[in-house]
Length: 431
Ligand SMILES: Cc1ncc(COP(=O)(O)O)c(C=O)c1O
Image 1 (cartoon, rainbow, N blue to C red):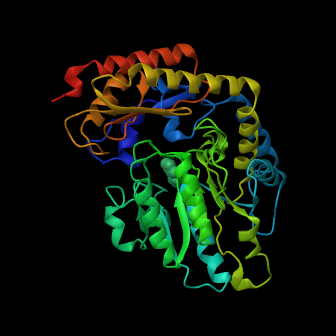
Image 2: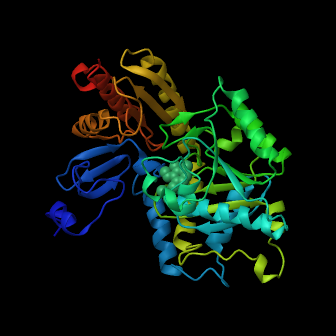
Image 3: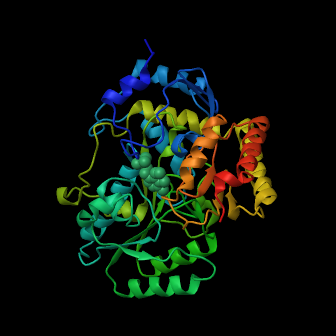
């Protein structure tokens, strides 16, 4: 019955983020287990990107599957306006325990919608406060916050959203902060804040994933948040990618003292099992909605808001993530990634190699300009798929971020293939 999946797929399915013709070939899967994706032909592929950065405990975790089954037999879904249930309350309690200063959780379905909710909360907060002039949003150059309209609007204008640019609201972008431009970046921030019309500042803390795994320092982020707070501007940490130990600590914001006011969480929240996201807010923000005036309520909700299956799975995932064995394996991954960066960073094919927690990124020299459309992308993808490893580079940025349960043997294999690729002058086409 599973035969010819590829052909049937071609007839009826439209895949994301791929040109209809000429993109990467579509591989039919029949199973996934641990770090492996298993194809129709029985090939095993190491998932080196945790399936778009979501799968942090490996695929088809039996305990999570068991929990899902148990929940499905009891309460699989209910409208979340006017009803509540144990899994939603418990995951909200659990997450808030780990986010000091945050007091309420709003549920949605994916990273983009968690950002939409955050932006709408910020916009409505100022309206509720009677400060209608506070409307502008500041983001960072290179930002990616998702593919819905609000999320696109606060993202870097470029290839992903250029078609929709005329429909996106205006946003001010700060230069991506580096040690060299710190003063310039802070000065521009202050200039914008001085206009007194800024409502919110949104950022991916410490690492911009889609921009090419670009890392920046907690010190400068701390200064930006501090400055924003001085001017009474709400700070939104988009931790959709960085949350749940991706950057080593539970949240990337744990690297800084001055805390953001809103958090967006998704991806690793359910260990990549079900679509679920959370937008959490501080007491001060919630208080502006905490009244009976209907025009001050947040009119936002999705059919599957607070889905009990997603919440039960998130709770189980969080418990597994925090177990001693998972933490040991995670620590080992962080250490191995750091050691590997040290080993290869001076390789002549590399401009820059970096690591933050479980995320390893390598910028390749190609003789073309650096970026998503760099043609080396195809060669990298095919080379590694042939080796039984899924790496889906961002142009000439090759990155590797596996599930935390990956073994030393599997890591050795991936590292040896990366080295083989780096030494393949033909593929790298170095000029
Ligand atoms: C930082 C960040 N925010 C938001 C999103 C959007 O999440 P989703 O694809 O679940 O809508 C992503 C996705 O990669 C992301 O990396």
